[in-house]
Image (cartoon, rainbow, N blue to C red):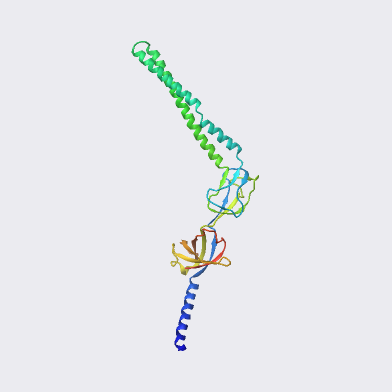
Length: 270
């Protein structure tokens, strides 16, 4: 009875061995990398007043990372805001327009009754026009003051350094008291965007055409990370390197909880 099952067991072992060989054939070395590394610099030159993050901190796009000294810029904003909200001169001009309008209406009525000359009526009309133009000029000055306020606020915003991406702080290169500028060699800090991650592969040309954009692969990071994750093919190079007979493939690997660090070697199984 035992001998009847020996061939079946052997066949099962052979099938398992064949599947393992096929999996090994479809596995390739890969490297997990950060989606991008960002050097964060100030958009304006100034002395760093404070750095609000530390190495290893997670940040979101738009978070405040550092501040430059901004005393003069803040004073300019306050002055522009005061000018843009002044009401006294405009209200006085409105009162003059109202008075000149009433005076012209009386003069026009009296002229119709021949109680005053046409010259007196023209003087009243000219006074109304002058008051109206003065009121209009003040309105235009008010609009210019509002634009100046917006400009001053934009200049002040340049004294705040914000995160351009969701990521993690990997290095702080400048400290409070040091000079920062957009053309400086060293940035204030470096960020790494690690969700999603990039998985980079270099495949032999014989695989060209088999790997397509949108295809799902199983990613197995090396120990001690371990585990298995699904990634989607994002880029398949349209050119082949003639010298090595290879082409590049990039996959996107979701990393919502930052469990997988960048820089880890892996295996990709298609």
